[in-house]
Length: 296
Ligand code: OGA
Ligand code: MN
Image 1: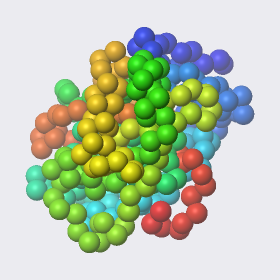
Image 2 (image 1 turned 90 degrees about the vertical axis):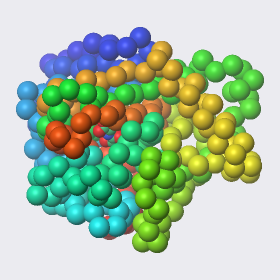
Image 3 (image 1 turned 90 degrees about the horizontal axis):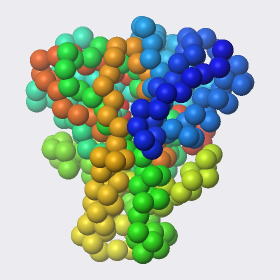
Image 4 (image 1 turned 60 degrees about the horizontal axis):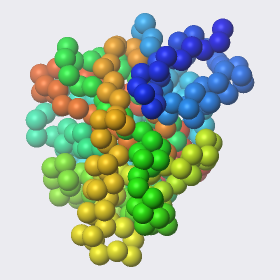
């Protein structure tokens, strides 16, 4: 059955139906999923029930090299999904299923997702697709917002395009965590994930479109005074996240939302996270094969 795409926003994002995510895809279906990503950058796949962790991983694996294992250490965090090292837990639950303690490092770390970011820009091997599946959603709020950085790039004045064409930003997870109120990182945390550098204008490899590549992880521009680089990053991020480039996803339980980290940013939005459980699990594809066994 062919897939049907229903646009959700004037410049990007679509709701896709006609695919059973629990089944192995045919090569044509894989191709179709990829070309829909190249066109829309954010694809929402509604599902009557959430995928099992194994189905989620199997689906993601068909779309590229998959992350497996933790990419960084959060001191004292207990992993709820430790039996599925491919999955990142972005919800607010402890391993015992209870809502995280108000003062826990794990909660403070995940609340950093409320800043505009793209996944894993702090790593040299970038994330391509993130696949986020909702298992439990709060009765209200807790939406996720997405911004189309290709459309934002296209809309930049030419003088700005020329100014930023060759600039490189340094990205560190500890920078965005510091901005979002995470406590001083421990030596173990800092050592677990050093910064990575990426150009802030990129050609998206599979669509050929030019795009910004920004994130709250970007702490400065290489070779530029820190404050000047930071101001430029802020100016570009503010431009790129204007309402005309933003789609806000209101979750229904079971949804799988796939976004392309190479050309979008996203952020979680607040909800009563000490009152309601929100169980969200993410599988992540990478630009290159993952070689390290555990910390990568
Ligand atoms: C993520 C993320 C936002 C959310 O899964 O990478 O940033 O709304 N999630 O949970
Ligand atoms: Mn994210």
